[in-house]
Amino acid sequence: MKKLLLDTSIIIDFLRRNDKEHSLLYRIAKEQYALYISIITHTELYAGKSVWENTDARKELQTLFSGLSVLPLESGVSEKAGEIRARYNIDLLDAIVAASALVHGVALVTLNTKHFQAIDGLLLFALSEIAS
Image (cartoon, rainbow, N blue to C red):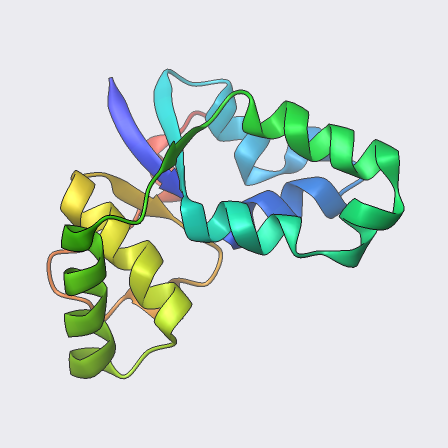
């Protein structure tokens, strides 16, 4: 089973849409993939004001998280993220997400490919890999 790490952009796109069946997350979830998020994505999504002001929004997020595995921030990921940050001069949170994908050997799914495309060895998930 192919493993995918979902970037925050994928989850936000899904949560904001009224037509969820047209979201990339919905399309990916219909396929046979093991889905992961970084602890950074988990934290970023809980940092939204609406999650704490709206019980329904928080429940929707918790339901979504129940179907995903959360990758922790361990020392190997931390070290790799530092290298990525220094080498590619990208945002630290993006560096941690990229490092999580690299260390755990999973492809990264993001709507912000320009943030990650220069990173050597990082596999970015291609839309062509899922059925239309």
